[in-house]
Image 1 (tube, rainbow, N blue to C red):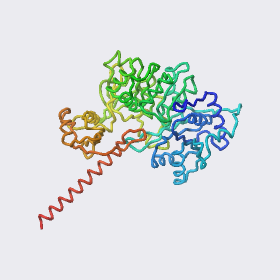
Image 2: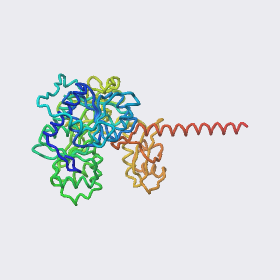
Image 3: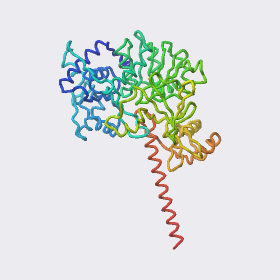
Image 4: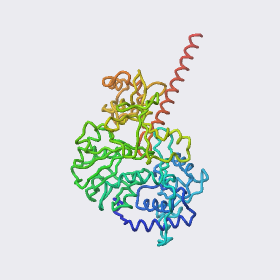
Length: 508
């Protein structure tokens, strides 16, 4: 169901259309293992296209509809898709990319008014449902990709994560026990996020009814929960925090809600507590996951209510997963209560990075996937995350996360956003001021000095107008670091030139 327009389709209708689309694709030469791109805003026919691809054993590559030209071009060059189902914006951009890199790909648009590309609606009308249609048999589900998901690209260029049919089923099976009867599930993730793919599977394989938005605000989210009597919600951590902070929640009856499943950006302990207090009586679940591994742990409101000493954790590992902690410098395996890089092993982990064997080999050590996160586990098996390895530095003999500095700077009322990076051995705090606020760098350094130990004090504060972000609104720290490094290099060169000029002046 599409919440804004009120359009609905039954499972039978979706299946019938998916078979017709699969017949069309088969007649166009699509077969098992071919890659098909889906890139559009969320709508009903996305699920139809998704199922049609799987009916043929084709691999689905959902790409975010707001990707810029370069990100989309990189993905298409790697994927070499045969067909692309697109919204209006993606259709035009993909067509230009196909011409630029000479990739032959049929573009089918969801835009019914298009005259440039064949439309999805007309393609569905070309064929009747074949009662004898047989879906493809996946002979090696643990080795054959079902989907290829693009990483966020916050630290390096985007990678393509291949998730097998078996991987996907294991990820999906962790959600099935949460739902029963004809309950409504509201999803705020795009199809390019695994959570929405799993939600699409739930609505087709169970009696769960999936609802999604094309456009929404914090207020409209509450309005639709009340109007549609929604029982379950999949939502990004950043978005649920905005709802709690900005929506007039007391104006709405949200008592139908049973579960809020928070994924994407993890909630801090403070924000998790705020969400739990705001949605009293609702089971608020937040997870520790990566695109490569799926959900690894989960923590629910029962921990917040009855086991508060564990509230700083992200919960226990799911069955079938193993974890080990390696010392960041020596790579020795550490025990409980000791912090290091987190490695995990289990059947739900990705096949590898698509068409990138070098990156895949670097990501695995003796069957364990290197998460790139720093953390620990306690004697009861609860896992604790302390941030990304790339955000950790050694200074004065101490290892710590740069987010420690970021969290303190965010407490200043003049700071809107902050990203700390290390370059040339120095810690640089990149700060965006709140609109209408003025503050000097020395004032912020004094502010931090009053709270943090000397070894955590930034070497410098540099003010920025904006931070480059991913399509999901996450800061691209790799690009921020590149930009700051260039600034420091230019300043260094200018200083060297000035010193040389002074020296010549003195000699003359």
